Structures are given as C-alpha cells and as structure tokens.
Length: 123
Figure 1: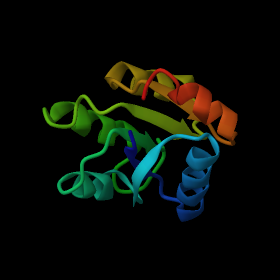
Figure 2: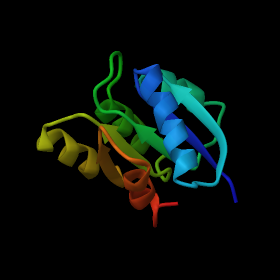
Figure 3: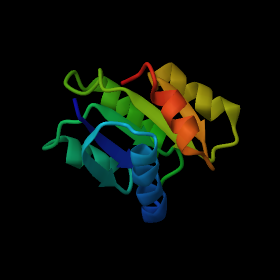
C-alpha cells in the first residue's frame, strides 16, 4: 500500500533531499506533496489527504511547533503521524514537539537509514 506524504520545510533543496531519501529508504510512496511553511502546509491539507507528515521546526510565517499545534486541534488531521526533521539544537523545542504529538524526530543532516529506522513502526 502506498503512502501519501507531506514534506514541510522552507528549503526547497531539503524537501527534494527528503523525497529522495524516502525513495532510498524504500518507503512505499504514493503522492509526495511539499509545503514551504506551516501556513502553506495547512492550505495543502485542505485539499490533500496524507498518511505522514515530515516537518521542519524552524520556518518563517508558521514554524513547525505552531503547525503541529494547529494539526492537533483539527479532528480530521490530528491522527496523521508527524515526524520533525530539524537542525534545532534546543532539546526544549524538540520536547515541545513531542509533547504536542509528534511521533518522533530526526536531526539534520540525516541518512536514508535514519529516516527508514524512524519510520519503521510508524507507517
């Protein structure tokens, strides 16, 4: 069964790298949607259904923490697993994401193996 994914990161290069890493990790992908920040992601989720979200924490307009909070307030979206993929050095921010309902996190730079390991058991 294929999995539709939303990748949320303000860097187009990171979004492309994450897409390639998902393929290398042999994740059975369906559609892969991209968003540049939390606001863009919420707009995309109005028309697209996904089974997994990979989101950065530090982004302009709406960061990953605020985006995660908005997701968890929405009954239709709160069950979608979200993994934070971040350069965030602050353990407090990462813990805040986990407390808000993120199912895990991966630090940048990452490898296909780290992504695969993190997603095993989630998807």
